[in-house]
Image 1 (cartoon, helix red, strand yellow):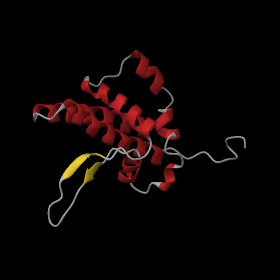
Image 2 (spheres, one colour):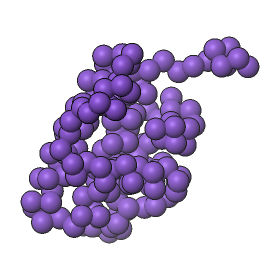
Image 3 (cartoon, one colour):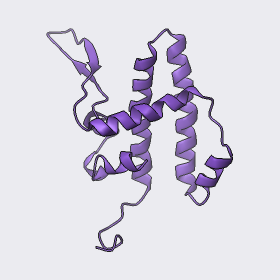
Image 4 (tube, one colour):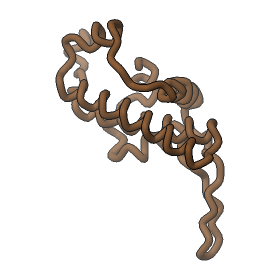
Length: 139
């Protein structure tokens, strides 16, 4: 989680989650000419380390979402809005993973789509959490 927060720097500069997804290079490229807009593979522009961490995290959405003992400990003390967003992310991404695989999509493409959507949920959480000021950090 620290990489996803520290990687892009100041989150407030991203007005929409799509801008953050583009920064991580998780959006499809396009080679448009005329009315045709063929979608290419992801652009891979931006922060390579952030993209790699998100793709690695996205592989975990293959498994059924549940709250185990370890996760329950980590959730203790978090604001209820963040817990609600994270649970919504877990259930949605797992369902979408299964749905895309059932449609015959390639696993790596499905995981890339999960990473892109996961970054959208991270953006949403960072909109809820107040940004620490320089005074609060002890600077």
